[in-house]
Amino acid sequence: MKLSIIIPAHNEEKRIRKTIESYHQFFVKKNQDFELVIALNGCVDHTLSIVTALSKQLSSLFIINMPQAGKGLAIRAGFIDALTRTNDLIGFVDADMATSPEAFYTLVQNIGLADGIIASRYIAGAWVYPPRPRYKRWGSKIIYEPIVKLLFNLSYYDLQCGAKLFKRETVETIIPQSIIPDWAIDLELLYLCKKNKLTIKEFPTIWYDQADSKLTLRGGMRMLGSTFGLRLWHSPLRFLLRNR
Image (spheres, rainbow, N blue to C red):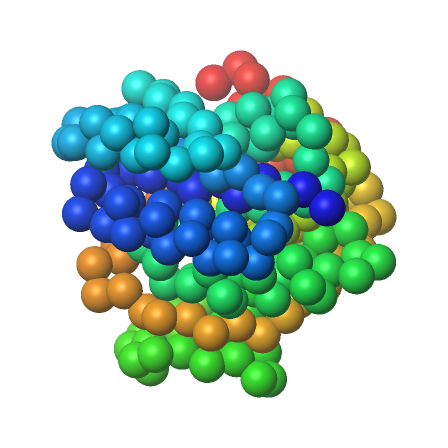
């Protein structure tokens, strides 16, 4: 089975090289048929030059360079690009190596008959190093998750973990329906899978928490706004957004 891994990158000059080289070396050793799709979005540092240099050394490395910043924009562009080539599994992972290649490979091994599989930091069997600050977990558990349950009737232990994998047919179904440009892309993809009656498995992961995470408190508040906008868009009242 051929695997496509999308890595969205926004100003990742300090860590993108390590991430690409680690993933490339791991899957080469596994004799896995794979490709890496690096989806640069709104980069104003040296990320592009670093990735371009790596593309001359490593096989199966594709680059998308978008002027706009946005995780959702990057992931959607990566999915669309991956669909132009032959593959069986298409997923994405954060650029910060919070999910190691070994941890991502467990998704490949365990997708089974499901239409998709998502890594989870909070399901039984998962490990997080170092332990996350309590405000991160409880802020989500007390505020975000109840809102998602109310608006979308989705119940997952971990909606936002940045490692997800889907079968090609799943991507072909949900990506044309996707519109979200930012961090709420994880939620939208899961909701679209539910809407299309696709089965998604949640699987425990090993997560190396990064101190310089791009998701800030302000970003979290924006994501809440995007969550309400997403519910409105995927409803009969979506014309209200079109007229804004």
